[in-house]
Image (cartoon, rainbow, N blue to C red; front, side, top):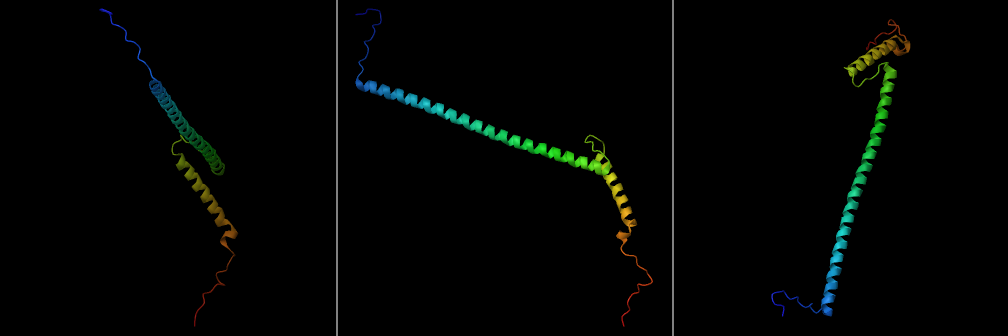
Length: 135
């Protein structure tokens, strides 16, 4: 008899059924842990895949915008060569100035066309052209 002290209980007798049940519990716990780790890996993979796809799309857009910038630069350089007027994006009323310069060049071209004999067609004598009279 233990008296006032708590007597330790004798260890329970484990049977083969108890050990098999404990083994099944451990296997189930390990399986759940493994499935959880795999689900986390799949989630990380999908997040990474979406990030890579987004980055690839951003790089494609960047490449297109870089190409578009060089194209516009070439167009403005060509406009500068044709009009003699440079484009300054921060300038005041630059569009109006370019438009005015283009109109001046167009008027000069029209003036040259009017003076050109080939633009007027073959010379005609008004006296030789008589309207036909129907009888």
